[in-house]
Image 1 (cartoon, rainbow, N blue to C red):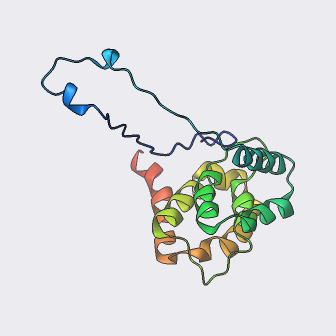
Image 2 (image 1 turned 45 degrees about the vertical axis):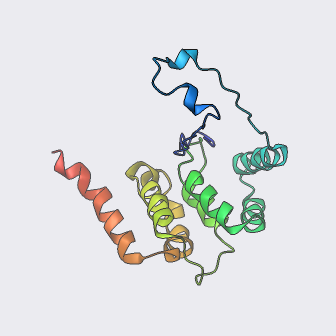
Length: 167
């Protein structure tokens, strides 16, 4: 799923076990010779919500974005937050977007470490920080407190040290 230019791809791996596995063992079978049936399920309500979310983001309807983020299941909201951190649409601040997305989340409900790190790495890209300076304080107050601040400092230092190593 790529949302508004995020190009964030998930590592989905599909394992399609064949019912007739024995017929392939010990034979010179090429992939092009194998016939398989695959069912792709469409979820129209999820598509509708994502379309609505995209429209709300482009229209900068921050209260609506906050309402969507708080209305869906917590695990889904967390996972979506990782994708929202990578949004690269014109005139859309991923920092402001994440601030509103996680606005109703209490400090007593921290993000999982892997998710927090992924969001912070995307948010602390130099291009993002330079383009959206005015959104940094609110982002730090709302989202940065949802994880290990020591890890946040390490991510921030790493992002700023990396360009200096190339010189």
